[in-house]
Length: 319
Ligand code: NAD
Ligand code: AKB
Image (tube, rainbow, N blue to C red; front, side):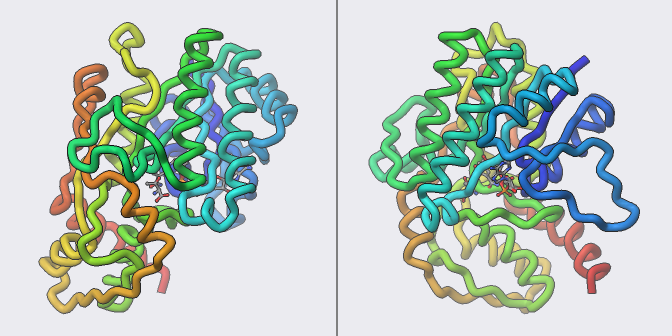
């Protein structure tokens, strides 16, 4: 039976991955952790939570021993836009945290899931049909830590036999928790703004094309890869995965099919636009399909319909 630790569990992915893992493996099998404490809202009890700063090895080690953890889903990180504001902190958290997680995994024999990103690519990477194995010269601190993290995970597998696995996620779209300060956050904000105000001012230009994925597909990717037969995995770390390649104009047009009055305008943030321009337009995820059966289920139309249907009542309930 798996015993799982999730770091960065209160973020956009963790707040949905933890319940999904608990549903699959049992509540007692999944320990959530973060450098923040869970919100103290009545009626929502966190069954198993540990406060962990992932840059500190001894608390990590103690929690892994205390709960006899055998698998770590290491989500704690600073995202691309925040990392450009605080590059030194991003290096400490993204690289220092991963290194310490891998060291504890080496000591205890844990498997590790590490999410890389389309941010691990750079302006010299082929932009369309970006191959699984290709040129990676990222020009952001986030991308530097993701590309180095992919290599470090490969190293721990090859040198120490640690079962490291990972995907390169595109921008993730979800309605449970807000995004944490990335370049693709607009693709979540646009739905909140559409439902609350009927309009949205986008910080990326109208034709900025990036890969995106709806959260249910992202959760399936994590579980699918971690449960895959290791004998079939050629790449192990940093599999390209995607579900759609879209622009702000295209998402806005799809929202308008449900909310005809929705309006979008643009106030481009040069920092986030430069980051987006350095990333691919559309990545090729055939290696993930061939090696562990990956296939996305939500396209732009299906994701938009589901987002609006699920988010609407939640925002209504908040008001
Ligand atoms: P997020 O910013 O929403 O959450 C990150 C969490 O890490 C936060 O809850 C934060 O409190 C926690 N954290 C920060 N510093 C910490 C520390 N020192 N110790 C412990 N916890 C700390 O991020 P997310 O969107 O949930 O992303 C999770 C992972 O997936 C990250 O590695 C991110 O790079 C990667 N990823 C995310 C996306 C996306 O679109 N969300 C896309 C590609 C890759
Ligand atoms: C970000 O924009 O930083 C993340 C990512 C694609 O890695 N959403």
